[in-house]
Length: 559
Image 1 (cartoon, rainbow, N blue to C red):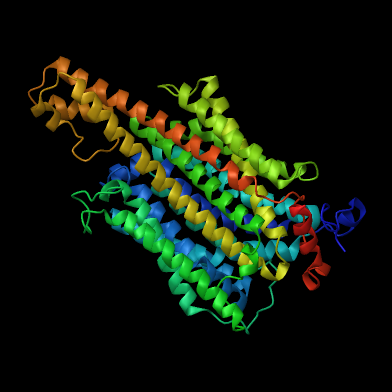
Image 2: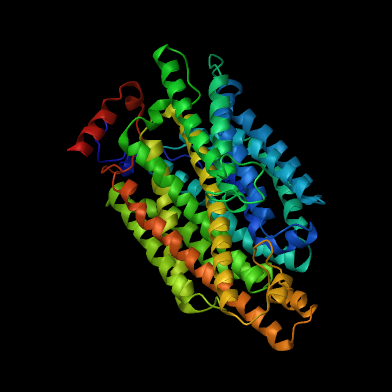
């Protein structure tokens, strides 16, 4: 039987003898890259997409939200379909549909087409994402499995690093559309290679919980739409843009509350199905312990922090500094590269430190890095301190994402690998959407507050303030302010004052946003402190038949 503190079958001799080829991982990684690059292109091409589609700067955040919403809402259904039809076949179908959606994205002429393409891509990814974990669990064991999971967890960061360079160059020199055209080509390559994967046996006895699908999808949709519209509709009292109000209360918090209640109804329904001997949409074993629940919470926080940082940096570089997407790529490269390297290399720490210790240390690193960035950010991203801060944040995030992924996989038997993949997909994409929504809501809200305070202290007459493009608060460049105010009766001094107010408010808003994200990272120490004490390890085949090893681990963790 496996001991709680050592990876199963982790002796060097056995691992060398059973070493599997890396080709399946290469294919899985390429499929993951196809899906991850899609959502990475959106923020790096924020400026060109906004100009080309005649959409506001926050339109890409909406597209990202829709993609993440559909992945998170239907990824549990995708895991069940994979078991019924066969994971390899489902992966191939998702690759084809996702590639077609990238073709639609490349030909988009307005924000509606862009959103439609992202919805289709989200549905395709919901089917494909759970297959990654199943295929890794079927092909790799021991340290190879830990490394493979680390590579898979680090792929979004690798996608960001690659995308910010390639997509940044294409958006600057040619067009952002070429990036999505390349994804169509990549989908063809991945489809051809996917036939080299070993088929996973089908499980035709699986039944889909239709009520569970509806409850989970509705809960996720309501929560994400609520968070995404907090700024527009109002965080508490309804704004004029709100579609309706209840006793003057904004619909945004009401949607979030309704989503939370539906989520509780989903888990209650799932427990009822288990009690009656029926199959729930998500196997509750993957979240039955305190440690597993804490890992999911920490995963949600870590993913949200990453997307918030990934949204704030391009927002500032492209909109505030009015720089090119290529410059934005160079600015964020240290951050994304650090995530990717830390995700792969941090598995070497698993024999020396427990998940609890690594989780706490990683959240502390993220908070320290964000504070460094907040106090050193200015009009030049090339300063050593800013780069150092981004590196620290990236190391913390990369370590966390791989660690939490390994904890979830090692805590459940291989027969539940699809459910673990689905849970990871839900957590990852909900956190993506929440991170982007949080960043945009916080940043725009702070910008509006700082602008209002600055204008109240300024000498600008009311008629000129009305001419400044802040009627709907959003990040705008100095040139936009200069052109708009300059077209009025403002004197050159008043134009300069309006530009200065805009620049100062943007900088303050970005700095405060980084500090708020850092504070959230500090609070995340509490769920990290409830992670298991044992070293992440793969459960052996013996553990799948007899789960005494899992009980031993949990009893030891409570000692």
